[in-house]
Image (cartoon, rainbow over all chains, first blue to last red; front, side, top):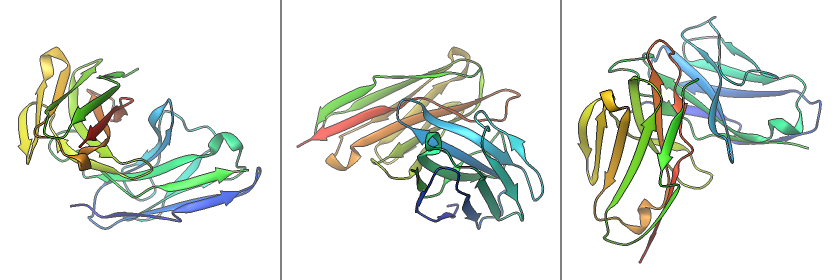
Length: 115
Length: 109
């Protein structure tokens, strides 16, 4: 099974602060994803990537940047955090977008609170 | 855009009863995945089933692609099955997984 880790697991920051969330996967998957989960909205895709240096925009990208530095590492950046970005953030990976190898595996999540 | 409807929104069972969770999606699915989540926990992939029937343990998923629906059957429910079950699908040519809002399952002794 795919191993996806996230850090930090919990983060508190203030409005206007800088936050970087980290994700690493160790199963050589091509695709990595960042989601946020909020009550009433379910899980929503922020950004995703199909390889080092690549970035694709998801469904709720405003206020977020992301960078894929290696095949293993995908970072989510909040440069001017706002209270509306208080959420539970998940990273996921998969080998493909569709077909047999598209199953996504999720990390443990990072709970971010913006005061 | 892609949409996923899950039903029921919540379900209460006594231990040992069976559960049937439904998922309807807005377009032909190239990817269909069922997840489980405890409150505040991570998402655990239960079954990856874009078409046909798949089993694992007490779980059975049946996806009828042409009818744009999938079901998850949990047999002989246990207290530890309590949590939220999500269905997620990817439509053709989108490459993005869209989640339903989940079914909250509570199993009582």
